[in-house]
Image 1 (cartoon, one colour):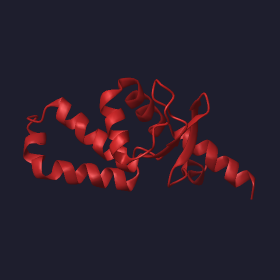
Image 2 (cartoon, one colour):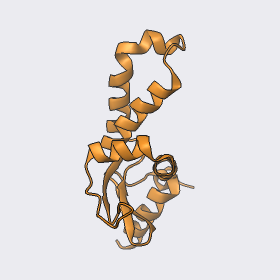
Image 3 (cartoon, one colour):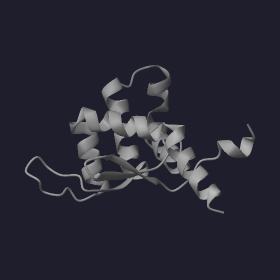
Image 4 (cartoon, one colour):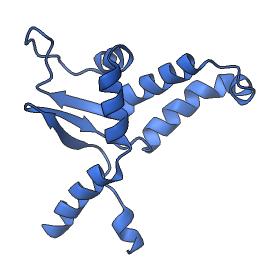
Amino acid sequence: MKLSQLKTKEGGTWVSIGEGAEILIDRSNNPQFREALQKMLKPRLHEYRRGLIKLKELEDMNAKAMSKFVILGWKNIEEEDGTQIEYSPERAYEMMTGTPEFKALIEDLAGDFDVFKEILDEETEGN
């Protein structure tokens, strides 16, 4: 395998999650996400290194950063009554912290190299 084949698409990829719903998602290791997480941790670095930050607090920081820099949009996601949920980073944060299944889905998709690699392969084949 050539190193160039390991490159992934940046800026997000639309991923179908079923029943017509799609999420525009970026990689969990994208620079904006990493920088945002570092900014949140920096003031508490001494606590983090000593293991004094509770897991819940770390998860909350992660959810905040993912809501802004990993989840970039969505289509056709609905409330139980069928009302469309409009995308916003704030709403994404609410869903990340209030719906464990949504959080798990986002974390799985954002960390799945193949999600981004497949799109890149399709674009490369078209050239």
